[in-house]
Amino acid sequence: MLFRLLPRLGYDIDETLNALGRGFTGPNLLPQLRQRACVPILRLLARRWRTFDVRRLQRRHDLGARLDVQLGRRRRAPSSY
Image (cartoon, rainbow, N blue to C red; front, top):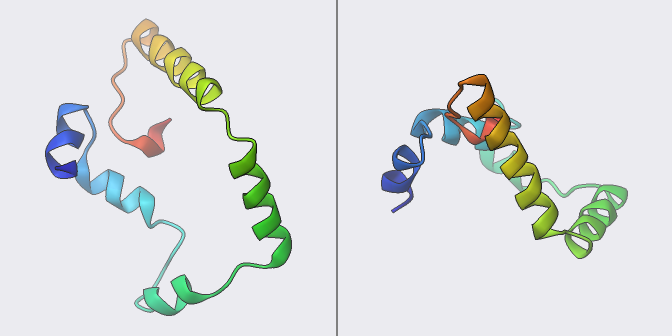
């Protein structure tokens, strides 16, 4: 389903998938994924989840989309935000 939806929304599947995994390099992906983050980072992440505002994110998205239209651009991948 995702692979059908992304092109309809104007996103390149390869670019999108590459953007999702860009923080991990080399052939040892699983050990990197299993490494636990430090406590301060986990606390920061917990605070961001607690205070997450969907309306703020939607406003940022809408403003970015308006700017893209005004500049005559079309978004291709989530990493291009």
